[in-house]
Structures are given as structure tokens and as C-alpha cells.
Image (cartoon, rainbow, N blue to C red; front, side, top):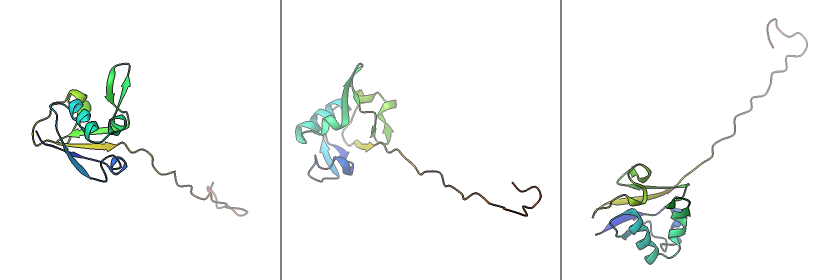
Length: 114
């Protein structure tokens, strides 16, 4: 069962720089274990132990054929031969608000201007 796994830049140190690797598994959980066997250390970057057991890390998104696994069964999401799994780190942030200079009207301020 061949499944293509697309690896984000930040995790490519575990895959010798490969953008995509082939793996196998009938569920995402099995796929993660097989990835760990072939690319030691990657599992800890993808999943964590919690009160509810093993789960995908909060700031990691995993998609199977463009479907977010958080809505399709999590790590128990079924996989089939030919599926594509995409791993994406969540991105946060944004720009600071733009500060506009305050108007200094000074003496002779027009009526109604503030």
C-alpha cells in the first residue's frame, strides 16, 4: 500500500531533505509509526501524549486527500493505496495595526475639526 506523504520544510531534516516520501498504513496512526521507523524523530514532531491518549499536536495539521483529519477520525482516519497525506504546521501571526499620525491642527483650527 503506497501512500505519498508531503513533508513541510521544517520537518525535512528528518527525511534527508525530501519534499515527499512514500509510506504505508491502514490508518494515519499506522502511517505515523511507519514514518518513524524510516525517519527517526519525526513522530515526536507530529503527535503527543495527552489525557485522551495520542493525538496530533495542536499546531500540526494533517490532511488526507485534502480532508482535515480532525474531522474524519483523527489518527484513526482510514487510508487507502494511492492516498496523499499532507502535513502542515499551523501558521499564526499577522501584522501590527498601522499607526496613522495624529493631526495637529494648532492655532486657527477649522470649525468642527478635532
